[in-house]
Image 1 (tube, rainbow, N blue to C red):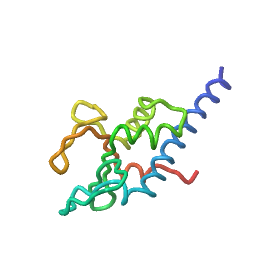
Image 2 (image 1 turned 135 degrees about the vertical axis):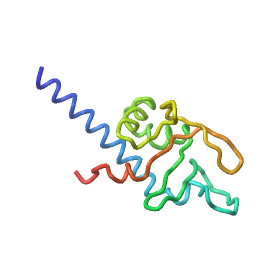
Image 3 (image 1 turned 45 degrees about the horizontal axis):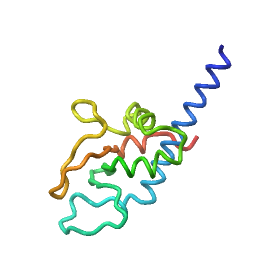
Image 4 (image 1 turned 90 degrees about the vertical axis):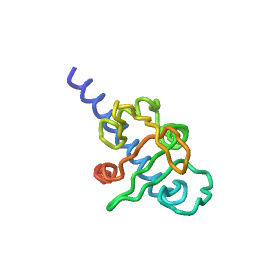
Length: 130
């Protein structure tokens, strides 16, 4: 039983690591180009947009459309969207709204959509240099 638990636990840690690594790599690569800046006074057009970015003192907060999250982050893994979201919520990387709903509605640039709120600080704290 110990070997079974050890094997399954390591698989979960590996899935978690790969998921966070995929999300981190995506944001490093596309954080400035595919997320529209919320505070941009010009209504600039973002090509192949996946959500919005809000600049903070240290690291940005990203608001990612659920469909983009599924295609860009979840599909490369062998997880379901709900497994991926639950994993990232447990780590504090995805923040829920007041009801702990991970897909909270937000209004940016006069439009309300549902987003996954990705905490850049928590993402940066995850130890990816294992």
